[in-house]
Length: 464
Image (cartoon, rainbow, N blue to C red; front, side, top):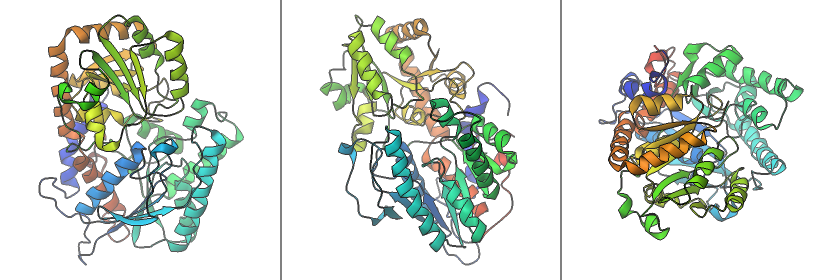
């Protein structure tokens, strides 16, 4: 594939082929996770610090992935920690071991300091990683394939180290690229000793893995260029949303909209991680200029920029802006449906290092996307290329104000963009489509199958 709107949008066009290549039909429920000769389930072990019912989006995504893999015949185990991602009021008491929707979940005891404080986050990482390393080292199963995520960022180092002394097959799932993210935030210095050591460790991790999965084309370019990995071993599979739980709901039917007095206003909503690598200055500047219009800006979530946003709302006197905590997951469809447009933001220099998964929940509920990013981003390509929203360049408050005013005046146009958004979601960003592509990579990487290299055109979003 080449350039423009086809890079990320290709996921919608080739998702069905990815399912067929995996031997999976979402409509028939073919069981690709069964060993072709013995009839026994192939075992997949997923490792991630956060998992259902934690508020971290990766935890929910991985739970949905695990459940879909079970439906496809795999035996799935998850190694994770106690809920600790959000503020303490979001922590839920969970058993240390349970069968959750057919998935064997095993939780490790870890500290739960605030992730917004560097020392606290580091201690949380160490208590989780230390226990996890010992468990994997002592119990690694030679007839299983392990899926290492990047939560914590250096989690796959466990796979690389264990593979040096035991037969240990693993796949890396890259959500956020480190040390690039740490350099961007300013936690470490580019070219410094820690950065070099981290890159050396990553190179070892990728080279000892069977395959790698990334979320977008720029992430694939970053991995292949930085660590000299074969392009055929890196597969682009986008994140997804649950199209049954998240559906198109009229704003006037939203309890959240009624509770917060949003029914008579045009609502731009951001819901998710309010992290350091998302940009909010532009939309706050527009909200300041729209203070006398029938407009509301609603920001929901927690993260490193929440405190700064709270101070900015007070400093600017933004009576038209609401800053709210995470909403209960079971009420997510209702809260997202109170929006007239969904803000999806990614800061300058971040794409490829990370990609906003909230894009897919916004598509699922059928709301126009207000994309805030650099001009050449894959986010812009998708939004413009499929007519599912409007794009604004980072820092361009004039354009943001103009776009919102135009959307306020054109309810029919917004409705049409919302319809296209849901249609695009159903075409390529459902959990079934993405799980089919994961199933293909995991099956081909499994030590009991090893059917050969996965061709790049067989996975979602990879150029042919």
